[in-house]
Image 1 (tube, rainbow, N blue to C red):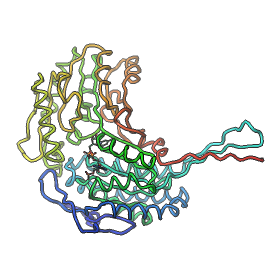
Image 2 (image 1 turned 30 degrees about the horizontal axis):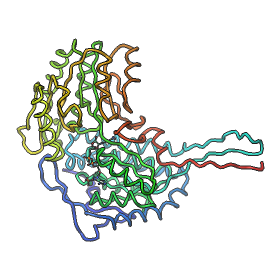
Image 3 (image 1 turned 90 degrees about the vertical axis):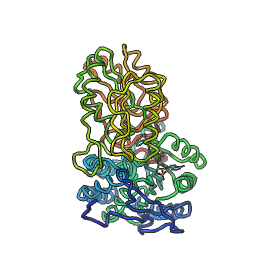
Image 4 (image 1 turned 30 degrees about the vertical axis):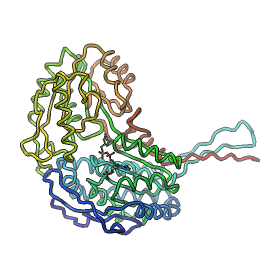
Length: 483
Ligand code: NAP
């Protein structure tokens, strides 16, 4: 890694405007998933340090919410400018801790920054309402106020943008935040704190704590001071946090796992569909919650799609993400690699065929070959579980009705995609898919301006767009009588 601004690489937590170690000086070592080398360490904090961070956030709250929306907006805009002017360094940090290709890291930094830019603007538009009262001497006024201290717990697959997607709207409306990043990718989070401080975010308003996930998560969930918990990660941990948060009836947002269907109808443009499948499936080596996980291809175009898709996947260059021409990096760890291997083996055992890949990459370590498996049956585990790796399972279908049933046959409901040129079908299928997001003739749908989120076991709430503000606001109704 070559970074110009070496101040960005921090190995301490950021609590109440100070860079600190854990109380007992315990640490977590962080490795580079491409080389397996240790690249640094961060404090292993627990419940005690979390309490301090929550208190700091609470103490800063009055001052932060007391600023005008315009003043908060100016600070956020400065944060955005600083993130973008340090884009290359932040991307380098991300690639060495997460493994994704450097171009994807650059893209994620810009994507993450775009939430800060958007909410710097939206902070000025937290409007209320005046509702006509049936009684003539009264007025009904509705105002929106910041909810209070916000806790954010984020995953390793998008180490920067999952933080800004939560913090920017929270900060914009006047809430302080305590962030717990994933232990595998803490440095991107800590670098954002360096720039937040430089932008003028006051001490205590933004805190980052690394360490023992169970202890920190428990404290953030049960603390009555924390009024909102926003989590992105697996459905399994999301359910634990939901039950923990019940004790204080906290407001929660859950951005959880997905199992996206990717449907190509017989009237689709097959070349466009192949490009969309490449983008949706193989970005971040298949480690995204919105990845195409089940590719349903109409029987009439199945062979053509498989042939073209196989050619495209065979050309993917796998390697260390710091090399400019690499388009697919390693998996995050050995556990993820095992899951991918197991899913492919199980699919083959239940009747599928490997069209390309299907094995560990020659580079060894956490590298797996970009893989297509065809003729997958509904008995295979991959049909029901999120793989989180560079494996595209293909299924053949005959009718629209049949494929909608197959696509919806999962407890998940995050992203979905389909390709068709028939306007009637586009409406019918968009409405029939039980998902929070539908991409029509595109494999890329994420941007700051959209309400990102899922239904069913994929989560609660929306992030991004103007809807993303609502999760950090309380509605208050004031009835004024005697007018
Ligand atoms: P994970 O295991 O659920 O971890 C996510 C975060 O939760 C990490 O910070 C982790 O900390 C923390 N955590 C783990 N156990 C915890 C506990 N008991 N209490 C509180 N926090 C706890 O998920 P992951 O493997 O990092 O991420 C992959 C998952 O995230 C996939 O299922 C993916 O689909 C989902 N995801 C969803 C979205 C979305 O927007 N819907 C976006 C990205 C990813 P440690 O790292 O310290 O263990």
